[in-house]
Length: 180
Image (cartoon, rainbow, N blue to C red):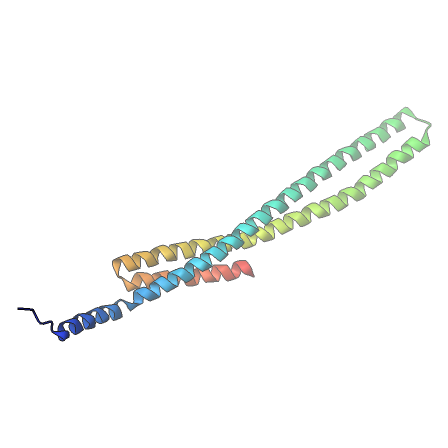
């Protein structure tokens, strides 16, 4: 004889599955929030890298300007010492002394401009580093939040997910600080 299938058995199984789905619905929210955390981490990482690169570029520009400043300083010292030697020797060529005096004055002006440029580059570098640090902290907070949320799913502990959400809020604060 054929076994008769009772429709209520399937209904009971479906109800049981739906009940379990409702109990575990928070896992869907964990997955969605983790995806959001990953997007925030990617954005913060991109900006942190940009500011780190810009800080390095500005630091190199400042270093180049300080090297240029030093070369002008050496040229000025040579002109000053040459001028002193010409005075000691009692050189009658006033044009040579005047040329050195003009060079010395020109080097003073050039050095001032170069120094200003170097200091501006240093300031820009510091500003970029000032943005890089909180953005890098945001990336770290988001990455830890993602890891804690994954552990929450594996262990089925909502409290860990809430901790991950708290770390996400901290990361968002760092992100805002880094952007502003």
